[in-house]
Length: 456
Image (cartoon, rainbow, N blue to C red; front, side, top):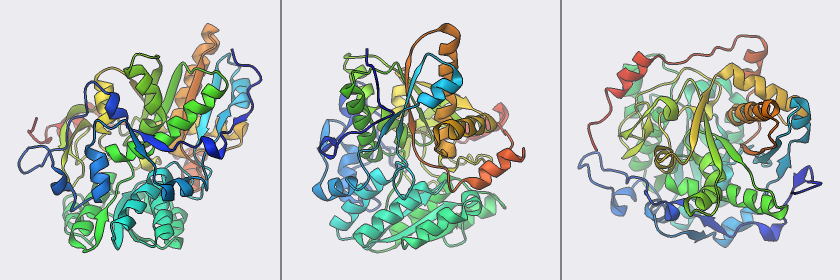
């Protein structure tokens, strides 16, 4: 239908969404509530507020409000780097020789290099509005830590980051960007917290996980006056803030009368995928349109494709509430893969419910296949993608090649969540053929599942 589509589709500043979209409002089957691990009952606002900012707790628990107004202060910060472009991958299409039309929403046009700034600004704003001194958090690849350190510097907040140890060692320059913006960065697990010391005692020499880092960040937050914990993925509030990605994507497509056949995103905890698919899934839930939606995860940490849908702790130290999600087990520590942002043991409760309701698909891909796709994309599209984003690229290429075989002119949209300029150690390992494809065995995963809490 649409002809002469520009290489980049830009919305103007006035077309930047003024509201976040809450996908839960249109879900017939709502995500299961967070549970208090002590009582086994749904968490109340007053139980969450010692850990999270009050306004964010309201957003976390609200399953009914369809739209939340974006505060003016946040909106003005968004205008520094949004709207982000929707790009037609003409050169990739030509290289593959496919009749498919490929588009990607590029979220790397800001100093943090990723989509994470969308929620970091919001969470820092609410912390400042509450009169807090600072916040604590965890980070895997470092994109969330970078984004939060930026947001905290904007609002004059202290920022304490616990970074997964393997990423801390692999990505020293990402760490230095955080420090440039005023954050303190600690490799996790560490000896600075009680839970960190326990994890190190149980797993000597561990390379860490997001679950470990979450436990440490939460412990420091609850023991430090004037601090709260903030999270870059998984939580309902984060997917709410990230809905600006999908809202912009849909507005750009609608501008040229384009309807995607499939929407593809990488999946670690769920923030970028949930944000990208939100308005499209909303249409699907309301019966207004249908789309094929695909979550892509690493074969080394396959929570959707090989996990179990059950209540589990959100962190390795078991100090956080229980969430019903697709999980590998809270004490699962993946191999030292290079997609640091996709090392979480579970998945967003929203996405887990949608997946369980068979409203979306999931596939897992091997690390070397991911970097093969990343290198091809960089060579033809001119952007060096983050390892996380490259999972979506891998499957977008695979689907485009299927179209080549069948002759179908399908329209594919995927999320390019960020750039990979701080991931050169990973690219070096790939080029030197030193990169492995470790995949956990069924017996290993069964052992972790056996230790799931007996709740729900």
